[in-house]
Length: 356
Image 1 (cartoon, rainbow, N blue to C red):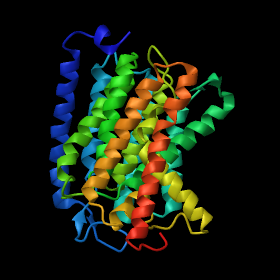
Image 2: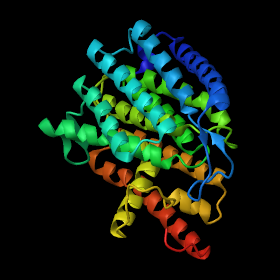
Image 3: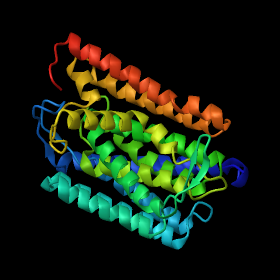
Image 4: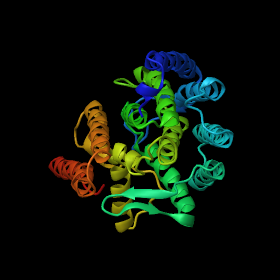
């Protein structure tokens, strides 16, 4: 049973109108933050060359929280049980608050990780955990007690991955917006009412921010935006396995964020292999190397948007094929990332970029 067959014929236009309204609300907040936002000064590892305000993600957060509160009050079809809803709201507010403090005070990595862990535990304590994995060939694999640490790890990894990838105008915001649209479409098709609606709410917040960040960055989303978007996308991925008419694969969000997760994983492994301090700031991510090698930053961001599109179509196909076909389909995003890596490495060598 799909969203369109369950709700009234005018439900989708109403939801799109709500998304547009939240985009306007987000845009107003972003305009205010341009005037009062925390300054982000350029340095050797950053792409921008002049001081630019950050914390534009406050607009995204405010719009999403407003939307979730409206959903909690009026969304009788899309709402969750009381405990789950409170867990989502509490974890979202906590993550946003700590991330905003990070923008202002530049917190240490340990403090950030500890607070992210606490926010993840708040969500898990409300019952938002992965109980099983739907895997190719193996089918549905129950996780038992391992579901809790897997959920916490997933929430933390995606949160930080989105934070690490937020280094070019429009990259993280565009990835989040497209991923939300795919999540809404796939969840709506399968009757995942909460993920469908919540994804549109987050998409609305990001839509209000994007015009101020791409193609020219009048403001950056900051940690309050990137960490919040990463955390909420991961939370949607967990919720998609638990709620709705058909449990969706836990691989849904990793497919959508394949470009982000691959870049971060590849970079962490490469730096660990070179015995570098992986917690130290750097400019060695693939997207950063591509820009340093001469690629237009706008094109690098657009390429990552394309990765989300590939991941989205892969996820949609993955959910409607046989077990054995899923293996070949599921490897498509990885093949794309390997090709991208080869291209960036060759371009870096041609530009005489040394160790990165």
